Image (cartoon, rainbow, N blue to C red; front, side, top):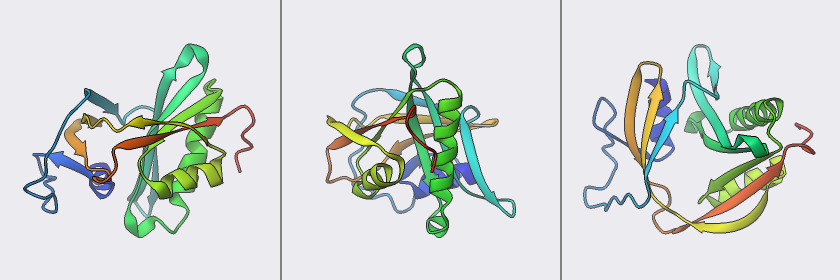
Length: 173
């Protein structure tokens, strides 16, 4: 349940189940313009915990394993833990694992200007372009639980920054 609670703080509207979103506007228009995106958080997922409480998590997958190209899927940190370095620790561990598994580069996409600057300033990402923001229906699996959700994102934005980091030269700092 804690992983799904983290997702909600990140701006996911979780559909049904014990995770309703009372803050989601009733008049919001939800659109699914591309596809269903599957997130199996049982694989390639790292949790940050303190005293048994999950503070956040991150995950990744292969974009093209044969070419050594990985992609970030999610990084979510509870608001109360955002000044503790949790996100940076999760991102460093994720990048280390991708590199250890043979990835030479990692791609990420974001519509959040703060996150874009964070990736560039702290992890060596460069922006390689902009892409349309295509909302999709997300299916999350964690253990025996699953939930469907739609990311709210920034409603006033309609594009994502496409960022890439070179893992062969990344020092892990």
